[in-house]
Image 1: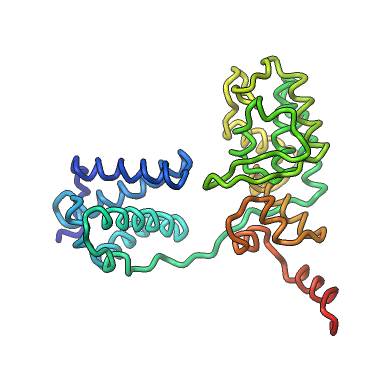
Image 2: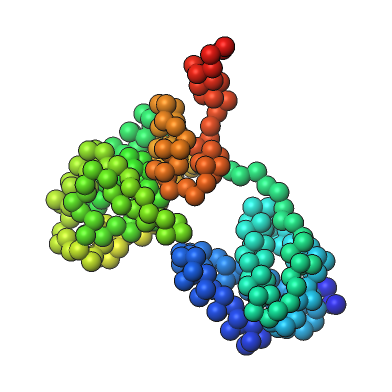
Amino acid sequence: MTGGAEPLALAPAMSDALRRWLDSERATRDRSDHTIRAYQNDVLGFLAFIGGYHGTPALPGNLGQLEQADMRAFAAAERGRGLGARSLARRLSAVRSFIRWMADREGFDPSKALASRGPKYTRSLPRPLAPEQTQDLLEMAAEGHTTPWIAARDAAILTLLYGCGLRISEALGLNGADWPFREALLIRGKGGRERQVPVLPVAHDAVAEYLRLCPYPLAATEPLFRGARGKRVSQQVISSAMRIARQSLGLPPTATPHALRHSFATHLLAAGGDLRTIQELLGHASLSTTQVYTGVDDAHLLAVYRAAHPRA
């Protein structure tokens, strides 16, 4: 081994294997383009490091020789260049998935490489906005652009994030065929999971106002929410509109589009909503994700306990 050597170029056979794994992840697990790009970068970084660490390009047949020491050396190198524990855990998870996939196809035992555990980290949560802050922000967004239809678009999108608990990618992925909204909107979320999300009148009205002002015709196969040039509006544009609105109101940087989804769940919980229902509305695969995501606080749990327990 030549620990500390420069990373080596990826061998064609490994490059082909990586491409086939990514295609498999995209096809069988319905990974988003963003996730596929992240996985590609994660595994490319690992393979380049391993090539330099051993002094020879990583090859499919050589992955069976990987041990805990190799994984720990990679993790140490990543931490040394400033990668946080959460990002490192995600990167190692992608690498392990790739090694498992390769093991099935090359017929080697990956147990030594997979025995190494990832770093522990505390999952950070977006901070929810107070209900009155959310209302102020939506009103500010409706006045935040000199072009009326764009201001109405931004307000409509942010209202959907808060009023329906949508991910920004889910809201921006809507097409003309999804309009007019019915009482519930069919959303296809992460992992291809579908869910029905009730549409509040305020969200319906916000989208209707945007469409009334929008200069582009509504077409079934075209984006519902359009950018200034008629293409599908990007997440960066909406994040920028959110930033301008929060700065005008003096809200913290944690007031992001994703924080509106978090606020939706948190406010529902505070109003007495049960976790199972919120889990369905958010499209989470497991209840544990919802418990962490909604930031259940001790005071609320204690209040529920005292109200429900016969001896409280």
